[in-house]
Image (cartoon, rainbow over all chains, first blue to last red; front, side, top):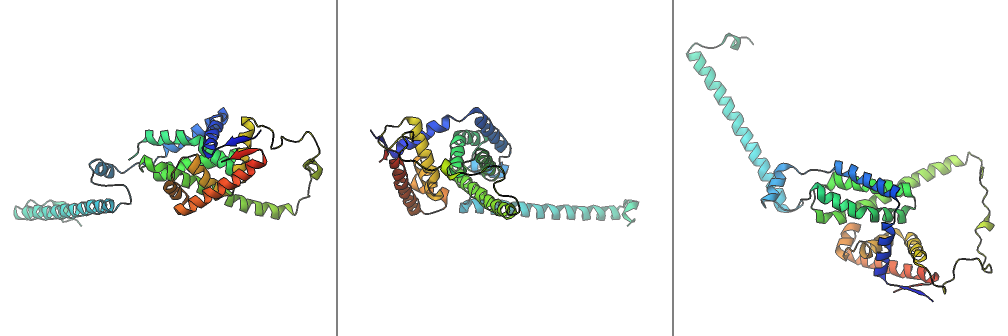
Length: 110
Length: 189
């Protein structure tokens, strides 16, 4: 008498075989999983926010790159604007101090 | 985007099968465990923020690459061992006797012949042995399609080849496996 099998039976038999792994092996696999989870790569919060609001798609998508570029441009221009504002403000403070003769002594020490 | 729970669920679901995949390839329990651990770690570190539906393809690709890396390292190790072994005495501890493994067709205590019915564990052992003997790419395609239940496109993405190649590998694997099982009295259709 011959044993007859179909391809899908092989999958079922292999499942049965995988379910019979010994406890020692299962412990090691569980430990490996735990270590892997501790090292899970986390998403950048801004990108997560973009994804939540449908402003970005799966990584590798063109619109994702456009979103990143736009975000980078906004941060860059905000930085430049802030720096210029602070610089101008510093100068106006010094001008007022000279005019009112209130310039601190340490301004001449350099 | 996937959460820690999604990654955990995926790994818990795939870990036993991944171990068996590695075992079919390397036939060494410690090496297979190391391979699965490496593959899990790489998936989590590099692709832990990817959508959960991409995990199966990514993981199997990483797993197969890790198996290949293992064989590459083995090759280098074997080269150096063979180089140094020429300076050490041969057969120092164990003598190999060819008569120990010589097949005796007239001996009635031989393993069951094809016509005898096989029990389930024998069938499983025959399948696992057959899978181990398949060429790596054929085994990979066969397992991804018929065990992992990936469709042709997903298997192709996981293997880094075309869908046509997956079909070819699968077809050859099925024929080769059927031939190997037939020798042991198992019909695969």
